[in-house]
Image (cartoon, rainbow, N blue to C red; front, side, top):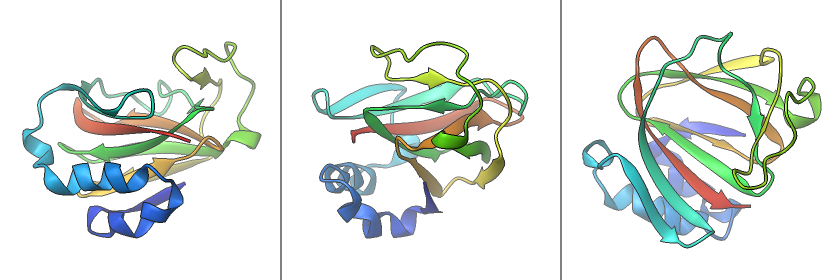
Length: 148
């Protein structure tokens, strides 16, 4: 897991071969004016989704992991809290892995909570359990999916 400011995003380009393309997209667009929806940068390997997401409480936010993709999550409208637990320490899964959606959900709370403000980002790798969208109101955010 990585948490940092967007000013430093380029420093992480070497972590994955597709990160440079994702970073170039972020740096070349006005993120706040992007329309809601999905933009495919490389079919099946890299895409950007802008969404308005319902806020959750810590009790409602479920830990999740992904086997095949890395998430780069960027809150735009408000501060978002994200739960974190290493995947190896996640409580039991409450459903089997969904290969179509590349997601496993877990029961129980996160071990740690991170505050991610607009102007910041969080990167979650397959080994990182995360519980996004903890906030007091709807969140406009970007999630970039990167093939691991």
